[in-house]
Image 1 (cartoon, one colour):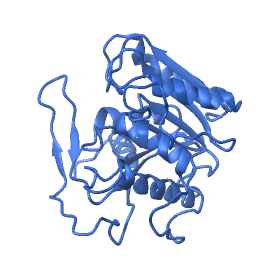
Image 2 (spheres, helix red, strand yellow):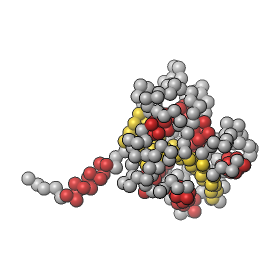
Image 3 (cartoon, rainbow, N blue to C red):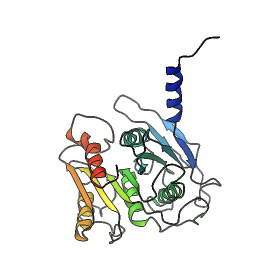
Image 4 (cartoon, rainbow, N blue to C red):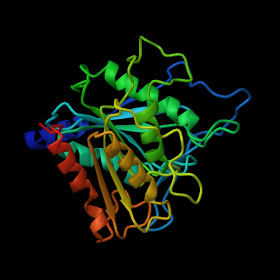
Length: 288
Protein backbone atom coordinates (compact mmCIF):
# COMPACT_ATOMS: atom_id res chain seq x y z
CA UNK A 1 0.00 0.00 0.00
CA UNK A 2 1.35 3.41 -0.97
CA UNK A 3 1.54 5.81 1.95
CA UNK A 4 0.44 9.42 1.45
CA UNK A 5 2.72 11.97 3.15
CA UNK A 6 1.14 13.62 6.19
CA UNK A 7 2.11 17.05 4.85
CA UNK A 8 0.11 16.38 1.70
CA UNK A 9 -2.88 15.26 3.76
CA UNK A 10 -2.67 18.39 5.91
CA UNK A 11 -2.51 20.58 2.80
CA UNK A 12 -5.46 18.78 1.23
CA UNK A 13 -7.50 19.22 4.42
CA UNK A 14 -6.64 22.93 4.50
CA UNK A 15 -7.76 23.33 0.91
CA UNK A 16 -10.97 21.47 1.63
CA UNK A 17 -11.65 23.64 4.70
CA UNK A 18 -11.19 26.76 2.57
CA UNK A 19 -14.08 25.84 0.28
CA UNK A 20 -16.90 28.38 0.75
CA UNK A 21 -20.25 27.44 2.23
CA UNK A 22 -22.97 28.14 -0.37
CA UNK A 23 -26.48 29.01 0.85
CA UNK A 24 -29.55 29.64 -1.29
CA UNK A 25 -31.32 32.88 -0.40
CA UNK A 26 -34.74 31.62 -1.44
CA UNK A 27 -35.02 27.84 -0.83
CA UNK A 28 -38.58 27.82 -2.19
CA UNK A 29 -37.79 30.07 -5.16
CA UNK A 30 -37.13 33.81 -5.33
CA UNK A 31 -40.09 36.21 -5.62
CA UNK A 32 -40.24 37.25 -9.26
CA UNK A 33 -42.50 39.58 -11.25
CA UNK A 34 -45.50 37.92 -12.89
CA UNK A 35 -44.89 36.28 -16.26
CA UNK A 36 -41.13 36.70 -15.93
CA UNK A 37 -38.91 34.29 -17.84
CA UNK A 38 -35.14 33.95 -17.96
CA UNK A 39 -32.64 31.56 -19.50
CA UNK A 40 -30.26 29.35 -17.51
CA UNK A 41 -27.49 31.02 -15.52
CA UNK A 42 -24.29 31.36 -17.53
CA UNK A 43 -20.69 32.47 -17.14
CA UNK A 44 -19.01 34.65 -19.76
CA UNK A 45 -15.25 33.97 -19.74
CA UNK A 46 -12.73 36.79 -20.26
CA UNK A 47 -11.98 37.59 -23.89
CA UNK A 48 -8.38 38.58 -23.18
CA UNK A 49 -5.93 39.24 -20.33
CA UNK A 50 -7.53 42.61 -19.48
CA UNK A 51 -11.12 41.35 -19.61
CA UNK A 52 -13.06 40.00 -16.61
CA UNK A 53 -15.18 36.97 -15.77
CA UNK A 54 -18.92 37.69 -15.87
CA UNK A 55 -22.02 35.86 -14.65
CA UNK A 56 -25.52 36.65 -15.89
CA UNK A 57 -29.10 35.35 -16.02
CA UNK A 58 -29.11 34.70 -12.27
CA UNK A 59 -32.50 33.55 -10.98
CA UNK A 60 -31.38 31.43 -7.99
CA UNK A 61 -29.33 33.88 -5.88
CA UNK A 62 -26.91 32.65 -3.24
CA UNK A 63 -24.38 33.72 -0.66
CA UNK A 64 -20.99 32.01 -0.40
CA UNK A 65 -19.29 32.13 3.00
CA UNK A 66 -15.49 32.47 2.81
CA UNK A 67 -14.12 31.76 6.29
CA UNK A 68 -10.63 32.98 7.26
CA UNK A 69 -8.08 30.81 9.00
CA UNK A 70 -8.19 33.03 12.10
CA UNK A 71 -11.59 34.79 12.16
CA UNK A 72 -11.99 37.94 14.26
CA UNK A 73 -15.79 37.90 14.20
CA UNK A 74 -16.26 40.58 11.52
CA UNK A 75 -18.04 39.72 8.26
CA UNK A 76 -18.58 41.66 5.03
CA UNK A 77 -21.26 41.01 2.41
CA UNK A 78 -19.66 41.63 -1.00
CA UNK A 79 -21.78 42.82 -3.94
CA UNK A 80 -20.05 42.71 -7.36
CA UNK A 81 -20.88 45.33 -9.97
CA UNK A 82 -22.05 44.99 -13.54
CA UNK A 83 -24.71 47.60 -14.29
CA UNK A 84 -27.44 45.32 -12.90
CA UNK A 85 -26.98 43.28 -16.09
CA UNK A 86 -24.09 41.00 -15.17
CA UNK A 87 -21.92 40.29 -12.14
CA UNK A 88 -18.16 40.89 -12.28
CA UNK A 89 -17.92 37.88 -10.03
CA UNK A 90 -14.15 37.52 -9.75
CA UNK A 91 -12.22 40.81 -9.40
CA UNK A 92 -15.20 42.39 -7.61
CA UNK A 93 -16.28 39.22 -5.84
CA UNK A 94 -14.25 36.11 -5.03
CA UNK A 95 -10.93 37.96 -4.96
CA UNK A 96 -12.41 40.52 -2.55
CA UNK A 97 -13.53 37.76 -0.20
CA UNK A 98 -10.05 36.23 -0.34
CA UNK A 99 -8.51 39.61 0.54
CA UNK A 100 -10.94 40.04 3.45
CA UNK A 101 -9.85 36.63 4.73
CA UNK A 102 -6.26 37.93 5.03
CA UNK A 103 -7.62 40.48 7.54
CA UNK A 104 -9.38 37.78 9.55
CA UNK A 105 -12.73 38.94 8.13
CA UNK A 106 -15.34 36.48 6.87
CA UNK A 107 -16.19 37.31 3.25
CA UNK A 108 -19.76 36.68 2.12
CA UNK A 109 -20.12 36.78 -1.67
CA UNK A 110 -23.58 37.86 -2.79
CA UNK A 111 -24.66 36.44 -6.14
CA UNK A 112 -27.78 38.53 -6.66
CA UNK A 113 -30.36 38.34 -9.43
CA UNK A 114 -29.43 39.89 -12.77
CA UNK A 115 -30.36 41.31 -15.15
CA UNK A 116 -32.83 43.82 -13.71
CA UNK A 117 -36.37 42.59 -14.28
CA UNK A 118 -38.45 44.52 -16.80
CA UNK A 119 -41.08 46.69 -15.15
CA UNK A 120 -39.26 46.94 -11.80
CA UNK A 121 -37.35 49.87 -10.33
CA UNK A 122 -33.59 49.97 -10.80
CA UNK A 123 -32.01 47.56 -8.33
CA UNK A 124 -35.33 46.63 -6.71
CA UNK A 125 -34.89 42.88 -7.16
CA UNK A 126 -31.19 42.87 -6.12
CA UNK A 127 -32.16 44.84 -3.01
CA UNK A 128 -34.47 42.01 -1.98
CA UNK A 129 -31.53 39.63 -2.29
CA UNK A 130 -29.21 41.91 -0.30
CA UNK A 131 -31.79 42.36 2.47
CA UNK A 132 -32.40 38.61 2.65
CA UNK A 133 -28.64 37.94 2.62
CA UNK A 134 -27.97 40.36 5.49
CA UNK A 135 -30.84 38.84 7.44
CA UNK A 136 -29.55 35.30 6.93
CA UNK A 137 -25.97 36.17 7.92
CA UNK A 138 -27.14 37.86 11.12
CA UNK A 139 -29.56 35.01 11.87
CA UNK A 140 -26.79 32.39 11.48
CA UNK A 141 -23.94 34.52 12.83
CA UNK A 142 -23.13 32.25 15.79
CA UNK A 143 -23.06 29.20 13.52
CA UNK A 144 -20.50 30.86 11.23
CA UNK A 145 -18.35 32.44 13.96
CA UNK A 146 -19.57 35.96 13.23
CA UNK A 147 -20.47 38.68 15.71
CA UNK A 148 -23.99 39.92 14.82
CA UNK A 149 -23.00 43.53 15.52
CA UNK A 150 -19.97 43.40 13.17
CA UNK A 151 -21.58 42.62 9.80
CA UNK A 152 -20.91 45.10 7.00
CA UNK A 153 -21.46 45.43 3.27
CA UNK A 154 -19.08 46.32 0.43
CA UNK A 155 -20.09 46.86 -3.19
CA UNK A 156 -18.74 48.04 -6.53
CA UNK A 157 -20.45 50.25 -9.16
CA UNK A 158 -24.04 48.92 -9.42
CA UNK A 159 -23.09 46.76 -6.43
CA UNK A 160 -21.99 50.01 -4.77
CA UNK A 161 -25.45 51.42 -5.45
CA UNK A 162 -26.89 48.25 -3.94
CA UNK A 163 -24.52 48.69 -0.99
CA UNK A 164 -25.83 52.22 -0.32
CA UNK A 165 -29.47 51.19 -0.80
CA UNK A 166 -29.01 48.33 1.69
CA UNK A 167 -27.25 50.70 4.10
CA UNK A 168 -30.08 53.24 4.07
CA UNK A 169 -33.14 51.04 3.34
CA UNK A 170 -32.29 47.61 4.79
CA UNK A 171 -35.58 47.01 6.57
CA UNK A 172 -37.92 48.43 3.92
CA UNK A 173 -38.67 44.99 2.51
CA UNK A 174 -40.87 44.42 -0.52
CA UNK A 175 -41.22 40.70 0.26
CA UNK A 176 -42.57 38.70 3.18
CA UNK A 177 -39.77 38.14 5.70
CA UNK A 178 -39.27 34.55 6.82
CA UNK A 179 -38.47 34.66 10.55
CA UNK A 180 -37.14 31.09 10.40
CA UNK A 181 -34.44 32.11 7.91
CA UNK A 182 -33.52 35.73 8.53
CA UNK A 183 -33.15 38.25 11.33
CA UNK A 184 -35.65 41.09 11.60
CA UNK A 185 -32.95 43.76 11.39
CA UNK A 186 -31.00 43.59 8.10
CA UNK A 187 -29.17 46.89 8.57
CA UNK A 188 -25.41 46.51 8.07
CA UNK A 189 -23.19 47.73 10.91
CA UNK A 190 -20.87 49.48 8.44
CA UNK A 191 -20.76 50.21 4.73
CA UNK A 192 -18.01 50.35 2.08
CA UNK A 193 -19.24 51.60 -1.32
CA UNK A 194 -16.45 51.47 -3.95
CA UNK A 195 -17.08 53.66 -7.02
CA UNK A 196 -20.86 53.48 -6.39
CA UNK A 197 -23.08 54.25 -9.39
CA UNK A 198 -26.45 55.96 -9.84
CA UNK A 199 -26.28 58.16 -6.72
CA UNK A 200 -26.82 61.56 -8.36
CA UNK A 201 -29.50 63.09 -10.54
CA UNK A 202 -28.49 63.09 -14.20
CA UNK A 203 -25.81 65.68 -15.08
CA UNK A 204 -26.03 67.30 -11.65
CA UNK A 205 -24.32 67.58 -8.28
CA UNK A 206 -27.46 66.59 -6.40
CA UNK A 207 -28.02 63.29 -4.59
CA UNK A 208 -31.15 61.42 -5.56
CA UNK A 209 -33.82 61.73 -2.85
CA UNK A 210 -33.69 58.05 -1.87
CA UNK A 211 -30.21 58.54 -0.42
CA UNK A 212 -31.26 60.27 2.77
CA UNK A 213 -28.87 59.84 5.67
CA UNK A 214 -30.33 59.70 9.19
CA UNK A 215 -28.74 59.78 12.67
CA UNK A 216 -29.10 55.98 12.71
CA UNK A 217 -27.18 55.40 9.46
CA UNK A 218 -24.18 53.06 9.92
CA UNK A 219 -20.56 54.19 9.52
CA UNK A 220 -19.32 54.48 5.95
CA UNK A 221 -16.03 54.40 4.01
CA UNK A 222 -16.25 55.58 0.39
CA UNK A 223 -13.75 54.99 -2.42
CA UNK A 224 -13.78 56.62 -5.86
CA UNK A 225 -11.54 58.01 -8.61
CA UNK A 226 -11.74 61.63 -9.78
CA UNK A 227 -11.57 60.57 -13.44
CA UNK A 228 -14.27 57.90 -13.11
CA UNK A 229 -16.96 58.10 -15.83
CA UNK A 230 -19.41 57.44 -12.98
CA UNK A 231 -19.05 60.76 -11.21
CA UNK A 232 -17.24 60.78 -7.88
CA UNK A 233 -19.62 63.58 -6.87
CA UNK A 234 -22.02 60.90 -5.62
CA UNK A 235 -19.50 59.62 -3.10
CA UNK A 236 -18.48 63.16 -2.09
CA UNK A 237 -22.09 64.28 -1.60
CA UNK A 238 -22.94 61.20 0.42
CA UNK A 239 -19.91 61.83 2.62
CA UNK A 240 -21.11 65.41 3.20
CA UNK A 241 -24.51 64.14 4.33
CA UNK A 242 -22.71 62.05 6.93
CA UNK A 243 -20.55 65.02 7.90
CA UNK A 244 -23.61 67.23 8.44
CA UNK A 245 -24.91 64.76 11.03
CA UNK A 246 -21.53 64.15 12.63
CA UNK A 247 -21.59 60.44 11.76
CA UNK A 248 -18.46 58.30 11.30
CA UNK A 249 -17.37 58.55 7.66
CA UNK A 250 -14.23 58.38 5.54
CA UNK A 251 -13.75 59.36 1.87
CA UNK A 252 -10.93 58.49 -0.55
CA UNK A 253 -10.94 60.09 -4.02
CA UNK A 254 -7.91 59.22 -6.15
CA UNK A 255 -6.99 61.54 -9.01
CA UNK A 256 -6.72 58.63 -11.48
CA UNK A 257 -8.17 55.17 -11.64
CA UNK A 258 -11.21 55.24 -13.88
CA UNK A 259 -13.96 52.73 -13.24
CA UNK A 260 -14.17 49.01 -12.56
CA UNK A 261 -10.67 48.34 -11.24
CA UNK A 262 -11.80 46.24 -8.28
CA UNK A 263 -8.89 44.02 -7.22
CA UNK A 264 -7.08 44.38 -10.56
CA UNK A 265 -3.61 45.92 -10.47
CA UNK A 266 -2.63 48.76 -12.82
CA UNK A 267 0.35 50.18 -10.94
CA UNK A 268 -1.64 53.29 -9.95
CA UNK A 269 -2.17 54.61 -6.40
CA UNK A 270 -5.87 53.67 -6.66
CA UNK A 271 -4.81 50.03 -6.34
CA UNK A 272 -4.01 50.74 -2.68
CA UNK A 273 -7.69 51.18 -1.82
CA UNK A 274 -7.84 47.80 0.01
CA UNK A 275 -5.06 49.03 2.31
CA UNK A 276 -7.00 52.21 3.08
CA UNK A 277 -10.16 50.22 3.77
CA UNK A 278 -8.15 47.85 5.96
CA UNK A 279 -6.83 50.85 7.91
CA UNK A 280 -10.39 52.12 8.34
CA UNK A 281 -11.62 48.74 9.55
CA UNK A 282 -8.74 48.58 12.02
CA UNK A 283 -9.27 52.12 13.32
CA UNK A 284 -12.97 51.31 13.72
CA UNK A 285 -12.13 48.38 15.99
CA UNK A 286 -13.43 45.83 13.48
CA UNK A 287 -10.22 43.81 13.18
CA UNK A 288 -9.69 43.21 16.93
